Length: 90
Image 1 (cartoon, helix red, strand yellow):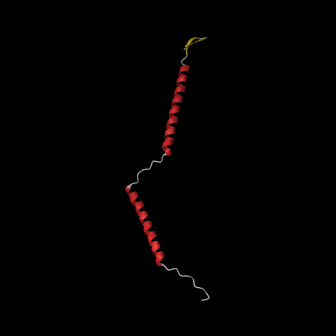
Image 2 (cartoon, one colour; image 1 turned 135 degrees about the vertical axis):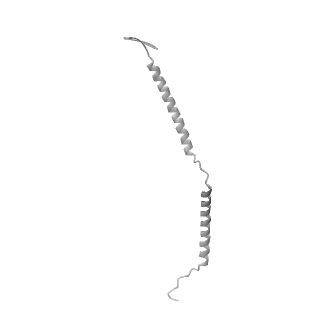
């Protein structure tokens, strides 16, 4: 585009570069938004990792131990005889 001015003919490339800059900015914003949307979607999904063998063993052992201790406690309670408090008048 050529514009007439007091000093003579001038090529106006400034406007084109401004338009290109605006387009680039818009495109980068769109890309940023798309990326952020995908990351939020991925963050919303809980991806569980597989438990390692030693952690599995540890957890299973803990469960077994709690079950054993509960069984022992119930057996102890069954064996214990609860004495009733004595009355004063008897």
